[in-house]
Amino acid sequence: MEPSSHYRLLDLHIDLARQRVTRDGGALDVQGLNFQLLACLLRHGDAVVGFDTLMAEVWAPAVVNEETVTQRVKLLRQALGDDGRNPRYIRSVRGRGYQLCEAPRTAEALIADEPVMRQRILRPWSIGFGVLAALGLAGTWWYRSSIEHGRIDPAQTLTVRASYYAGIGQKDNNERAILLYQQVLARDPASAVAHIGLSRAYSARVCLYNFPYEWTQQARAEAELVLKTQQDNSAAWSALAYAHDCAGELAAALRAYEKALALDPGDDATRASAAYLYQEQGRLAEALHANLQMHGDPARVRFRDVQVARELELLGFTDAAERRYRESFQLYPDNVFSNIAWPRHLFLQGRFKEAQEALDQALARNTPHVDLYVLGGELALLRGDRDGARHAFEQARQLRPQMSLPITLTALYGAASPAPAWLDERIAQMQRQFLGGASYPGDYLELALLQDARGRHADALRSVDAAVQGGYSDRAYLQTSPLWRGLASDPAYAASIDTLSRRVAAQRAQVLAADWRPADLHDTH
Image 1 (cartoon, rainbow, N blue to C red):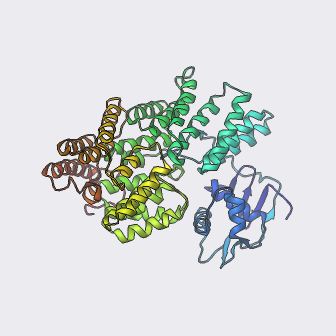
Image 2: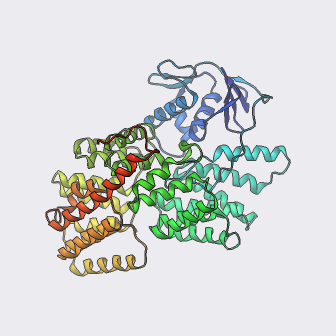
Image 3: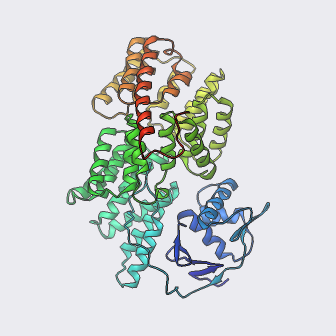
């Protein structure tokens, strides 16, 4: 087919330059990888496009498998309102790949009566843990609009491309975004958008892609550079918060997120990020409410569905949480947090065989994360396989050599017991860290493991209680994980769980009484 920037596919109009799909004058929510997949199929006309071709043209250089392609086709069909059982736009060809149901037609002229998309600001820095990544669509619209008005320049072009790559949400594309933002700053050292985008991409290296924690210092410096002259820049505050968040500095992160929200209450990405930290503080009802109070389309907020499921799980709405976890695991095989959440949920329900099967599937999806290997170690311990646990914990340590918990678990479950002096130094190091304010409530649980290994049983129990008092809320984990066998029989341990249970029960009742509660919640598990 002759290259074109506009296509007609039955009643769809596809504008490749603006990454926009319309039907009967109304815009459809087709963006990111969904749009790239559709564009690839359009380029091949009505020919069958094989899995290898799709993976090469849509995902490369990222490594994915046929399941990833299949799930992405499902998402594209949903966005188009297509039915895989009776397809109108995209059909599957068994064992070969996919093809369009009808040959697309080129349509070089824009449709005159198409409405201009609303000029709602979608910020290129809104990416990250629990954060929006629908950036390519807005950037491409801005780029085309700028061309039409004769005001495009090379730095602006680079900024748009950088925000597009950052929004895709894969490691290699994050690195492309970093290089492009750096090129922007070489041309325009004062570009606030580039400094903010670079800050978020540096933080994403740590939060999402297992880079050393030192990158959060770089991320913080980029955000603070903007704030020196633009104290009212909400995006810079959000980027600063993300840097603190990825460094494990909960209090500082939450202050900066809340500052960003005060400046821009409509920033759903930042709202979701703050909600995650409310969850970590044990403010479960508040976290759930925040995640349900999105000002725009909730589907545009990355990882939000997994966050909502986690909040429901902690509040004891197990069935509602499971439905969301299962769907996310099925639909988003390239989402690292979905891949963690589903096997962990099964583990917490005591469904260990199912958890292992889901974990094996998650590990095969090439979204490595420390939590996956730690869960594998815990499942191995439950089977009595200490060597398997040691291997899993070592894999976690190798993935994140600078991360504290894998170091601790590797030492505690190593072939030889850790030396008392080593334990004493680790304990002192963590206590100094806590005094400096760089901790999450759950970090006290690692301290408890170290103290118990050192024979300081009473101190370990006090650390568990400190975690609970700080807001730690996962009762099922404290009752299920084999890591707590040394403490679980102590009445003080049970008392901490009782304290946690009472706090969660009060918040559960608050949610059930609220007019904003999800429709599928009932006063049962």
